[in-house]
Amino acid sequence: MSKTRLRIAGGVVYDPANDGGADGGIRDVCIEDGRIVAELPRDAPKLDARGMVVMAGGVDIHSHIAGSSVNQGRRLLPEEHAADPAPAPPLADPDAIPRSGTGGTIPTTFTTGYRYAALGYTTAMEAAVAPLAARQAHAELDDTPIIDAGLFTLLGNDDYLLRQIAAGEAARARDYAAWVLSAAGGYAIKIVNPGGVERWKAGGRNVTGLDDAVGSGAVTPRRILETLADAANALELPHPVHIHCNNLGQAGNATTTLETMRALAGRRAHFTHLQFHSYGGERGKSWKSAAKEVIEHVNAHPEVSVDVGQVMFGPATTLTADAPVEYLLHASSGRRWVNVDVELETGCGIVPYSYKEQAAVASLQWAVGLELFLLAKDPWRVVLSTDHPNGGSFLSYPELIRLLMDRSHRDECLKRVNQKLVAGSALADGLAREYTLSEIATVTRAAPARLLGLKHKGHLGVGADADVTVYANDADRAKMFSTPRHVIKGGVLVVEEGQLRRAPTGRRLRVQPGYDRAVTRDLKRWFDGYACVSFENYPAAELGE
Image (cartoon, rainbow, N blue to C red; front, side, top):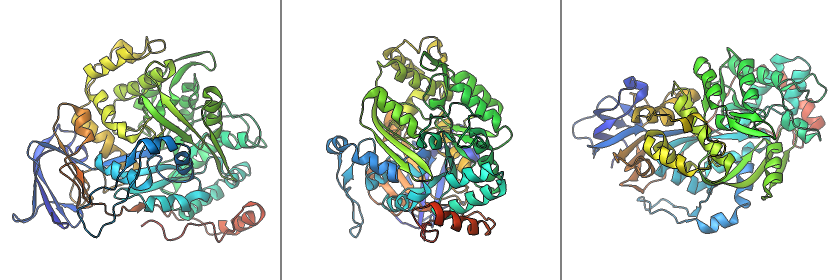
C-alpha cells in the first residue's frame, strides 16, 4: 500500500464531527501525504471497505502510560509480566526493528504503543506527570510507537504555586503555570486532590472540604482550583484544567464533586474519572450511587466536560498522584504499596488491585460508571475512559463499548454482580438506552479530540490527520472493537487484515503559552533556595512539535 495516497472505498463512515451525528453513510475516505483530502485520482491505491465500519482513529483523553509512577508500577508487578509476554510483531518493513515486551495492566512502552494501535487508537494522553519527572516521561513516550501523545503537568500541590496563591499573586501564578508547561513539555494543567497531597506530605491529615486550610491557612483547595482554572483560560490553553477532585473513592464524595463544579461555575473545566467521585452515602458508614445527581449537574452546565473512569471487573493497578488515597487503599486491602514524595511538586502512590463481581463496592463502582454514561445527554462532554490502569486496562474498552450498546448483555452482567449496594440504583431500576455507533464514535474519537483542542484529530474531514480505523461490522460489538481489520496512522497502514505490520514513530503534543519573563528572576531565587536541581537544568529540552 502507498504511504502517500490511499482510497478507503465503500465503507460505512461514522464521522459525527462532520455528519451531524447521522447514523453512518457509505462514502470513500481519501488520504494523501498523511492528511484526509477531498478526492484522489481514480488510479490511486484502494482499500476495499465495503460492508465495514470506518471511523477516525481513537483518542484516549486520560490514560497513564509513561513516567515515574507508571515505571514504578511496572516494577511492582513481575508476575503480570511473566504471565503476559508480548513477542515482537512481524513488521512488514525489513529495516524496521520490532520490539518484544510484556503486557499486564501496565504494558511496557513498545507493547503499549502496539496494543493501542491494534485496538484502533492513534492518540493517547498521559494524564499526570510531575514537572521534575517530565524528562523521563518524554523518554518513555519516545519509546512508545505509533500513537501521538502528550502529557498533563501536575500543579495542584506545587510549592511555588501555593506560595503565589498565599501572597495573592494571581498573575505570577499564571505566568508560573505557563513557564512550567513550557519547561516540562506539557499539554495541559492537571490538578489532583488540590491541597490535600501537600498537607498529607507535611504530616497532616488529608483535606476533606474545599475550604480546609493548607499550610498557613491563606491557601485552600477552592483557591487552588480557581487560580489554576483562571490561569488555563487566560493562557487560552487548548484543554481546560483537568481536575481530579478531593475525596476520591470516598462514600459521600459526590457532595465535594458538586461543590467543586459550582465553585468553577462559568469557567471551562474538565473533571476526570468522574465515576470515582460520584458516590452517595456517608463516609465510613454507607455507600450508594449519586451518579444521577452528578450527571444532572453536568447536563445543565455546558462549560463542564468529563471522562467517566469506568471500573471493569478484573485486574487493575491503582496509581495516582493522590498519595493519601493510595495509603488508605493499602491499609484497607493489605496489598503491596509504593509511595513517592516528589519533592516540592506532588506525591504518588501505587497499589495493585482487582475488581471482583461479588465485591459490593466494586459492583457499585461498575454500576455508577454505566449510569453516568447512560444518563448523560451530551456525548460530546461525557467521554469514554477507564482511567487506565486504575479502573481497568485500556484493552477493556471493547467490552465497555458492548455494555453501552447492548442492553441485554448489560442486564445479564448486572444479574451476576453483588446486589447489596446496586439495588435501588438507576441501573438496577432499568436503563433502556443503547449507544449507537455514531455515539461510540463521538465518545471515543470526536469528543475527546474536541475537548483536547486537537483540531486535526477525531474526525475525517478534509485536512484532518489521516488516522483511520476500519472495523468488520460484527454484531458482537466487543469482538468488533477489539480486532479492527485495518488501522491507518498518519497515512501509514499500521494494522493490515488484523495484524500489526508497521510501527511509525508517534508525535509529541505540547503547548508553549506566552508569559511575562520577569517571573524567571523570582524563580531562579526560589530554585537556588529550595530545589534539588538548578533553574537552568530543570527544563526538558528539545521536546514536542
